[in-house]
Structure formats: structure tokens, C-alpha cells
Length: 257
Image (cartoon, rainbow, N blue to C red; front, side, top):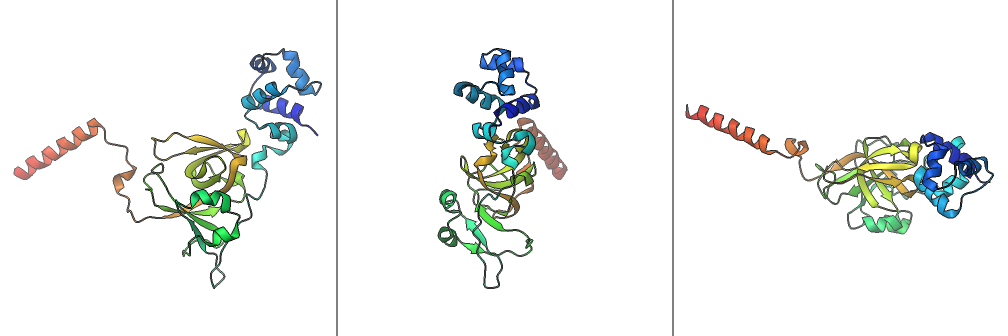
């Protein structure tokens, strides 16, 4: 059963696009859009691809998924994968560590028990026993003040709709690999997650919900570098430097007096 007609009508209205607007974008008559939405006609492949682009929806979802009744496909309850876990001699779950060099292989091996068992394992106190945890070593400086080499401990997210906007997550994705970002959840609106770096020099980007293989909410981190109070401040401007010099000069005058 095809849901093309109902999905087209629902998504068009959701985005506030009129039939005339859509017709102009597709270079067809408005009556043709009406025919699409009534099920009396179907768009050709080129027009269908353009519709998917304008409405921010995959072709499979547009045709085969009842969006109005069930919501966007990305928020449907599903197991992201079958987790491979390891336990110690007291039957407590160990935390597996995915290092920088192992992150590329992790994309192909996260469901392979033999591969996972070769990863370093450890245990941390004071973490809730109600979650499964995994550790990921950061590469790059996109999430300063956490520096490269910092290990982020994440709790497994079994349903993407549980992702809370503004919090940080490690995402294992088909398109971007293993990334640690501040995530904003727009799955209900357009089926995507918006990923932002804490380092403003890196541009935000989007990933489709269906491209996410695993999601881990950051709960703790391990670092050999102790952050300084100034790490969270913006870079000093010339005005800031001028004020600092004035303050130093005043302090020197007081000491001489």
C-alpha cells in the first residue's frame, strides 16, 4: 500500500507550503498537485526526487510509511542494534573502550562479539546499574574544553526519540563515523538530528535518524588534563588585552607606592 498521496498532503501542510507554491517548484500546474494528493496521479521520478528534497523526507518513507498516523519513521521504536557486552567475575558489566584508532573498525565490528571482546575493558564506580556504558576516546578539538585524548563515558540510548536537545552524545553513524557532539532533536519535524560543536570554529551539521547506528548519552569523562577556569571563556579581544594591561600598570604603581 502506498502512502504517497496522504504523506504529500500532510507534509506540505505541515511546512506551510501551498499547492500553488509546490506546483511552481515542480514546474507543473496546481491541478497536478491536487491530483497527486487525491491519488489520481503519481509524480514522475524526477518530480518525486524534488518533492523529497523540498519536504525533507526519504523516498521510502514518503511512499511506504504512514507519516500522519505513525509519525516520522526516525522516531519509531526500534533496537539500534543488538549490544555486545562483557561482564567481570562478579557478573557486573564492564565498560568497553573504543580508542581513536579503533573507531573506524568499530563501525563494522560493533555487532561482532569477537571484535568487541578484543577492546580494552574496565569498570567505574558510582555509575547507575540501570544502563549499559561504553567509552570513546575523543579525537580533535571540536568539543573544547575537552581535549583530544579525553575519554567520554556514554550510556546507551535504545530509542532515538529519547535524545534530549542540548545534551551531548556520542553517535555512531553511517555517514559521519563516530562523533561526539551537542545534539538537537528534530526527528519529529524532519527526521534529522542537528549536531553542534562546543568549539565555535566548527560548523554544525545534520544527520538523518536512519543513519544513526548507536547513540550514547555522555555521563562522565576521564582526562589527564585539568581544565583551567579560563578554558570556557571566549578568546581575548584587543580591548580585553588593553584592560588587562591597565590593571597590571595600576597594580605596579600601588606596589611602588
